[in-house]
Amino acid sequence: MQRTLGTIIGGSLADGLTMRVNAETPLEIIRTGKFVSIVTPQYKFFSLITDMRLEVSHPDILLFPPGEHEQLLMSVLALKDMYATAVVRPMVVLNDRKQVLPVKIVPQHFSPVVEAQEEDITTIFGDERDPSGRYFAVGSPLGMKSPICLDLEKITERSNGIFGKTGTGKTFLTRLVLAGLIKNNKAVCVIFDMHSEYGLQARKEGNQELFVKGLRTLFPDKVAIFSLDPLSTQRRGGSPDMVISLSYQSISVEDLLSLQEELHLHSTAYEAAYLLSARYKQDWLAVLLSHGERLKDLANDVGAHPESIAALYRKLKQIERLPFFVPSPQGEEPSENIIDRMMEFIDRGISIIIEFGNYTSTFCYLLLANLITRKIHHMYTRKTERFLGSHRKQDEPQKLMIVIEEAHKFLNSQAARQTIFGTIAREMRKYYVSLLVVDQRPSGIDPEIVSQLGTRIIAQLHDEKDIQSVLMGAHNIQQLRVVLSSLDSKKQVLLLGHALAMPIVIETRSYDDQFYQAMIQQVKPLHDMINEIF
Ligand SMILES: Nc1ncnc2c1ncn2[C@@H]1O[C@H](COP(=O)(O)OP(=O)(O)O)[C@@H](O)[C@H]1O
Ligand SMILES: [Mg+2]
Image (cartoon, rainbow, N blue to C red; front, top):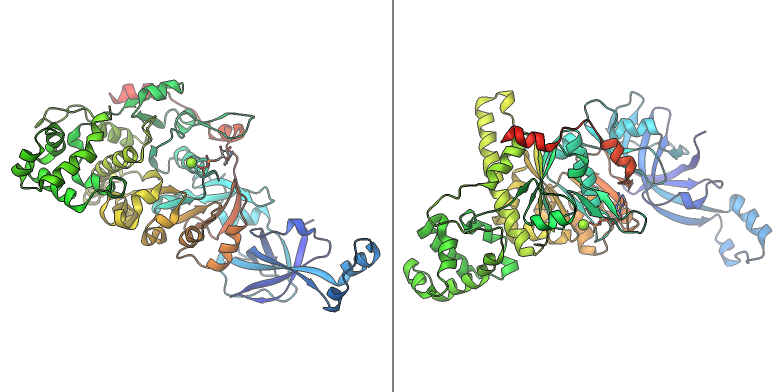
């Protein structure tokens, strides 16, 4: 019933075991990244195929290869003298009591290699039907149907990353993982949605169906859209649940630190900003922007270099063109605080999508994501400390996951040291806040941050530096690199890390009608929830 693909004829744990591929096994079904199991009486060794090789029984055969028309000779040779071998790398061992163990033993000679079976796969990766809702299927092994699950509890314990070139399916995968977290109530998410792809609907490449459903559409009672550009949200056929408006006072000098590269800000400009904020506190930016004509006086006033103040002014003046920053009178607390609104939603377990609409500049994205994350993190830290003080179960914060795209802009070596995102990535689970970073250029992220990521979901990458950086700190780097380089350009990823018992290559779960059906639950319209809140 179960097809034997080949038998183990040698090898080592360090370099991988050698499988001789059976003559009857079509070579097309043996490919790098394939998930197989080596069966012995007591153990099953779950393994990935990481390399393949063509062999002949005697070198002389190669001196006189059969010609195109010598079919008879060809079939005689195929029987015994030509064969293929594959390098099979065991990742975990399952014993006869169904315990998953690290690989410290080898299977004996001539153990058969078969395709892994569904029941073994659920033993290793968990079962989506488990009532705890802990496991969520994200795809299936190459050439197989059995679902591979992520352990959602483990996902929320650490920061995680989704990497791959543009167009490999990162956004689709991110939406998939978030759908799992939201459906099973494993985390509240704050998503900085630069291209408005997560909320209502998203454009799909190809010509059959143009759009896929966003998270707000799938989970109307668990997701709210906060929009910076309500007109854009409306043009896409929805209305935001909240419109974001912020005061100049909400921007602190810290928020500029991650803009250093983007704005080419010199360190003296920072010093000037610090001097301003020492003097004018939260009004520093409003004061600066209102002194366009009298920058020299302002410089004298705070003791800053006039040129630094002028440079700062020039760089920050673009904030005036952003309509969601509403200047509020100096010295006054802005009355309507959108961040408090966000916290109220988060406290009720409702995830938030921050839509940027037409404001897709890196400047906007970095500034807003920093500012909002800094404030939410601050509130979450206090919430956690209250819980740690009281130890009352009802005070325990929900896990919060913050999703950013273009992560290298937030977490390059310089920014990671100074900004809130670096802090969150480093402090890990202490305050119940973690990051989901999505990026097409992982080599731009601080290596220390990458090596702290719990789980990595990696699609095709071409750049050698990127490949090196995503595999940083993993076991079997050499073999995984081969697997990674053989991924298709879409809908195939290597899963690696904390939320999985072993690295595995999967065909990503399709984000389609069948998926929507699986997500649908009894819902309560969000309007009712909002009415209850306010
Ligand atoms: N899981 C999936 N289900 C259906 N289509 C997918 C899936 N993953 C990728 N695609 C297709 O690939 C295209 C690119 O995916 P996308 O997530 O936008 O890439 P990226 O964010 O990496 O640039 C999508 O428009 C879609 O057509
Ligand atoms: Mg994308």
